[in-house]
Image 1 (cartoon, helix red, strand yellow):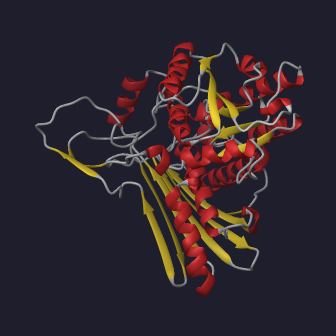
Image 2: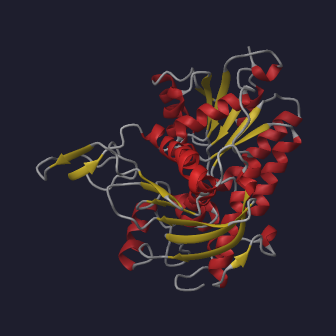
Image 3: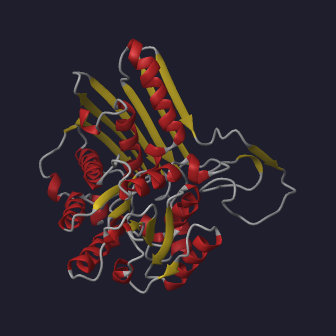
Length: 422
């Protein structure tokens, strides 16, 4: 029985828009979700859509099949909710197709979940939110790191023991660092909406705010007040690496003409409902070279602290130089080596928070929980990101929200940014 037809159902039929790296992470995560079935995949690349659907069947998360269009998925009575995992530049047209299919009577849904960031700029984020609101869908903003078990457990314990006896935390730090994205569109500011700041600061800016917010209280109790940011190209505009990008991704990724930042740092001053100023520090990089993807976070208060680093995995392997094998990512995402002492993240879908977030939003769309993050929260994140770009371009701290934010498009996304400039 389908939840969207008004009949009671204990299971949710899920379909994916997108069939790439991110969608496959979610598919792996659905192995830990008990009350949903992945039943469909659509992608403009039919071969990839078929491959992703086959993966879903192979790992037994649902009898998924590829669909010819998004509208066809909406029309299928078995599909109750859609996970949007396609590229940033396709976000609005994908949402428009969903909404048009519902408004034209082709089908219905109960919810839609969108991978980070919600959109490339504030105007697009508002449009995505408003389009979905028009047809009354429940929404979920897919921010996996907030759902990481280490982040959630550390936050709960510090607030329950440290903050309860010595006062609220006052400083949070979060970082996401790796050696560069998988697909060419990520490297292109016009398609992605910027560089590493837009790609990954969406994680870190929300994580610091989340850590500084008392469990059980809304994010609105910790409000952004001032933002100071810096962006730079540290690695990928060096001549040898410009050539490497062109060789890997073709002429469409030309960092002599249209570079994007590969490093960004942001300091966000928050004002709290209980009268404090607290600080969030966020850092992101496509120029980090280590074992692979490194996620980290810290939370500090008057008499306590916590720290998290995904490369402190508890499991390590060593391979001498005599060991030969193909390059891969079987030990950790964005793996940079196949020899030496290597950390292994045994279940990345769990460690990075995908399992918990997918489980949560399935329950939200089944009416069993209230959403922790909605499209409104996704819009707020985009506002912080765009303020950070404005700060970096102007070279100064900005009050939040700054004037002109609604129409602002970063210089990186316009193709006007040059490394070394503000």
